[in-house]
Image 1 (cartoon, helix red, strand yellow):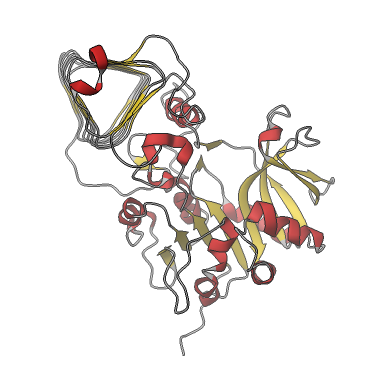
Image 2 (cartoon, rainbow, N blue to C red):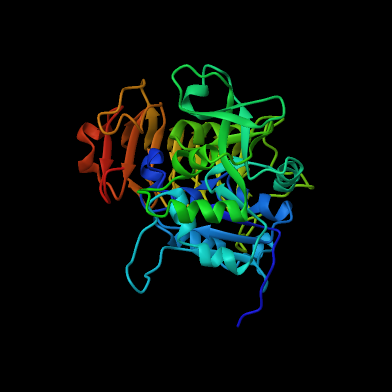
Length: 427
């Protein structure tokens, strides 16, 4: 019989989402594994929050396109989560003796890993999303939970009342006890929005998961929280007032990266007391040629800059050729940009090659003819491993995925709002 391990609180990090609103950026990679800030991936932020908060046991639940995420996390060394007693564990759906079942909802994913959680016999369970950019001390949230003798604590943050209808909002009394929920209300009566971060007393969570195990697509916000509220459990709202960004759309993802290059960035990546950890490959230093110009930008290690870079975030191992100009753009790692290329407001994913003389981000905004729910800004978005031929012109609010040739561009042009998708499903 295995020795009983007792942990005060363990974290379960939901990282299986496709992130379909990021379009071609998540065609072959899960949203939490998308690059951010030149050297990080989105999942680095909640993982770093865990170790900075003293949480040393983290289950990472993966599902959609897990390979990059699994490789990045490994055994957790960058976050000091390579431990014999706890540490980080990747938890994909697995085949059971009677059936094989995908995770069908956030709570269903946790339910399928009850055995993992019970192994640590925790007093509390912290449920996290793997796709937000923020710094939070979960230990302070746990102290709040204990002080209220709460069964459930929901992290909330104030939002402008005119935006509250986009969120689940909570209505509390003067002691922050939750009295009512409103899921995306048309006329919100509160501006306290749920962040999708929960602390449960373990026995309460386990009981609810077992009670609702047959609920189709069981979800915390839609099912578990309302169920426990109806049963009279003590539920409180922990108010968070720091930086928190849901990078779930192309526009918000671009904005969050651009905020990093402000003179005094709202979100500081360099605080010594709250470091953001990531998997770092051993690569050579960056090189900036004598004729190059770099202004108000982040430049990753191992990059070779011969052209001009303005207000952009450049990942590791990027090459920008002579005469090229990159403005207001996110260039992910190992992208090769030829000579005399102009890019304005682009998001260029990993391992993409852009031929000489190409012009990306020309003309005015045009509505997307491909997927207007995803592509609704004036960005040029190119998925990873793509190839852009020389001397083509690409309009705004466009999407490209795959190896394209000159014949894919009528008159050498991809008009604003159009897309070229060479691989994969609809993105």
